[in-house]
Amino acid sequence: MTNEEVVAALKIVAETGKVKDISKEDLQSLKEYNLVTPVEDEKTKKISYALTKKGRVMFKANSK
Image 1 (spheres, rainbow, N blue to C red):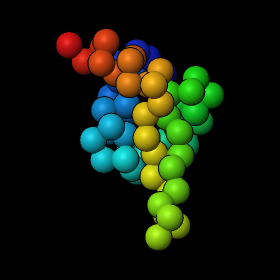
Image 2: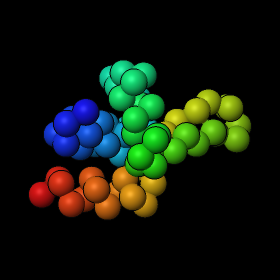
Image 3: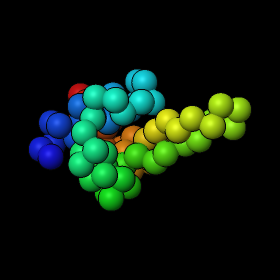
Image 4: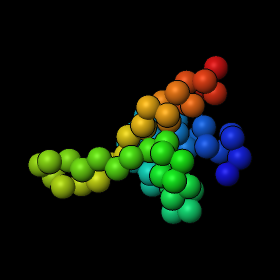
């Protein structure tokens, strides 16, 4: 993934918490670099994604 693609994927996760527009390979690479983490909803047991501290820093630095 290029830097622009990573920032775009982080923006999608930050705004929606969902990864439906991100390919499985890209999601796996985001997980490997510790930029996103899965979060399970207690009531519905659905998995959503959130940015880690490293992901928030990268998104903030590159979104200016």
